[in-house]
Length: 229
Image (tube, rainbow, N blue to C red; front, side):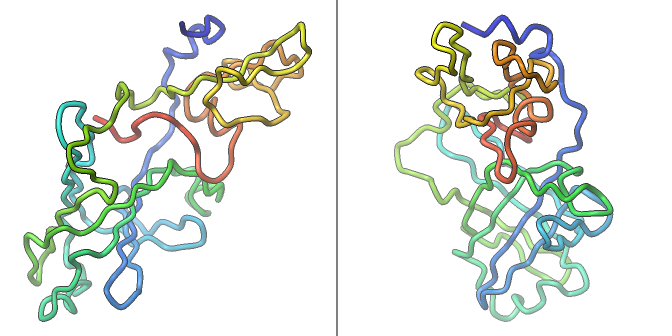
C-alpha cells in the first residue's frame, strides 16, 4: 500500500531538463562521445560530448515481448565516421547511453554534480547504413537473454518503485526490513524534499529532484524508466 505521507507530492512532476549522453567505443579503443539533447557541446564528469544531429529511437522497453533493438541515426559530421567507410568495424563495439539532468552537467550549463541514472550498455549489432552523410547503427542489449521478457515490473517514467525505509518510533531507529531503496544516510527529508531533523517525517517523494537527488550523489538508484514516452 502506498505511503500516505507522500500526499500530493507523488502527483507532482519535477521541473528538470533530462538529456541523453552517448559513448561509443571504436575499434582502436578510442571513445566517441556525443549528445542529441543540446545545441552546443556538453561537459559531464570532466568529459566533453559533441553536439550532433541524432535521431535515437527504440530505447523503450516493452512488457510484452523481447528486449528492444534501438537505432541511432547519426550525421557523419565533418567526416566523423570517414575512417569506417573503407573498414567498417563498429559491429560488436560497446555503446553506453546515459540519461541525466542538464543541471548535473559541468559548468557553464550545470553545477557539475555528475549524477545520472544507471548507464545502459548496448552492443552494435549491425550497421544499417554508412556513407559520407550519415551512419545508422542498430543496437542490441548486452543483457539480452533468450526467452526472457523484460522488464518484469510496471513501467513508470517519473515515479520510483523502490520501497523506502520507515521510522520505528518504539525502537528509536529506522526499519529497513521491507525497504528496497539503498539509502541508509543520516540526513532526513520530508515528502516534499525539505530537510528535517524529525526522523518521523522522513519520507521519499519517489521523484528524482525532490527524492533521489537529495539523498544520493553519482549514479542514482532511481527505479523507474527515464526517457519513456
